[in-house]
Image (cartoon, rainbow, N blue to C red):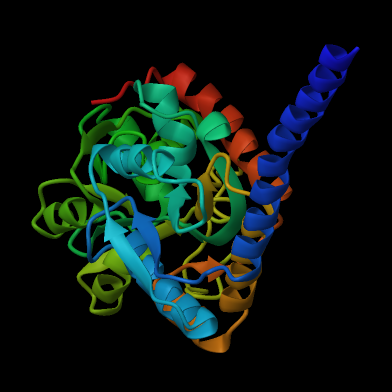
Length: 332
């Protein structure tokens, strides 16, 4: 009888001991979320310094630093068209003190064309969209091509001889060229570069005839008369460059392709911290100075719910998966 009593007491004590850490962890998690961030936060940029992705990361980091009173440090992890940075970010602690800005290439397209060491749906929590921006098709100002129809006429007269440069295989610039080929039934040759700026430099030097590009590397050359804009890949004219006609206006209704950037956290990050980061991003993107600085990069800021951003990434992967398959695109 006495042995049974001691056994009962022991079981109760063990049960209480096992239940105690659960309550402690929950309390610690809540406390950590309520004080988040209480130390510097690392923002992983998946491209090298100086480009659109790096600059927007630095603008956002500066504003979050102001809002939070804690420093947000940009950590550039470039390579493999953004995949190296995504892999690095996936393996950071799931405590909210490291998040990544992912965009169309590494978040949706790269996994379709080459093996990558991460799975966006498994390894990340989508937090919010940050901004969107179309590409602009440009030619050297010395070119005889002035409109989309001029490009199509030249391409049909000399199949395969027109070259189009891009910032790399699977980039929006590459996908834009493949969409042009598909929508217009033409043959033009893709020339991938290790960055969009390099492709623009070769366009200026006359080494390639066409380049799809983010606005930032080309707008200064367009305004200086060194490059000519042929069309913009938005569904309607951009308020940032209203003088550039869309491809839709020029008869290619299927050539709409927009780059996008958004924030993701490592999987397993507590929901309360996800909410805190989301709140900070929404507040930052709503400020006038961030909107003005993003406009200079040729992108339009805009936040979203975590659920909407997750669904959007999935829809983009499905959309471009069809194009990748049809065009036979493979990673370098």
